[in-house]
Length: 131
Image 1: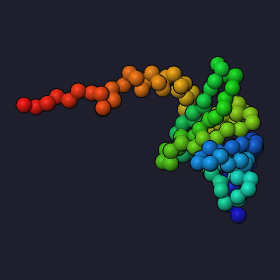
Image 2: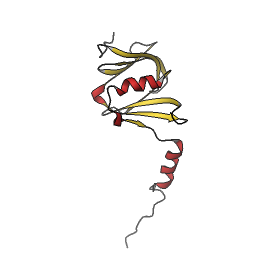
Image 3: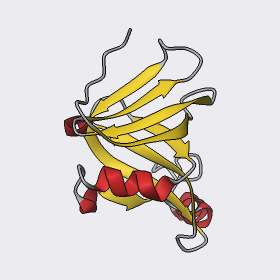
């Protein structure tokens, strides 16, 4: 059996982990860590201590009316994406442990396209030939 890092929980909610295939389970925001436990497989879990979280990235659509996903970017292991029934409650509970300047909005589709077009990719750049 997996032992939790938290002593108390501020929020327990149904959620989905988007690490590979979608796994359904419980998201638990506690005093020491963000945790996800799969409903079907008890060996499938994610525990992220608050001191390892670098940024929280929220995908916001329709001017804040809908938040389909949010992710926790850790200092070592990269990005972990989650979704839940009430993401605003989860982000408010996370805000108690992560500074507000480390909770950011992800880029929109058009911002990603614009950055791709305005950057100078290596395949289109001219190389200076030495004679």
